[in-house]
Length: 243
Image (cartoon, rainbow, N blue to C red; front, top):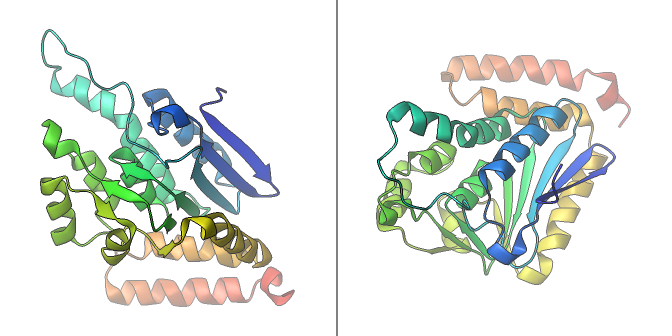
């Protein structure tokens, strides 16, 4: 495993640090595949994942995707080229363990998508977010797919079409992040959340993630039925009775 991603295990908490600070932690295709591989391998036993960026930025997008070509690629080649990105988003969304992102500095393109795809995102109030693809004649539907169940469509389309930088407070207002704190408080806020979830029954932590993911696409009566079933199952478990 390369040093592009630093993985640290503390009990059943898996912390992943994007470790290319000299380029703002822009993610190469190899890094994106590696991130997906880590989540896929660990999510059955992890209590939660924590994503951070080394240095001043969270993630400044994708790295190494530019450069000219003699001829444009065919559709099947483009699809294969993009599938590892969709896979990464999908693994974060479907992970049994919740995903927490700590965002500082820039979160651009893939970085914005990564922050939005996390289940909880805590951002420093100096963080900046952008979906720049439209300005570079790149279809931004990969990024949009990571936010389609997080961000209202009017806000998503506006940010895609304008490619504007938005503040952490604006990202909070549209639902792309969960909370905004001063930069000096970012690590302490994230660590306090980790401690709370570590102190909580693991079955309940995972059940909240399961319900949040699985209930969204179904109609209201089925969502309520699902809630009744998971409520009864988890609350009657021996793990919760010990608390």
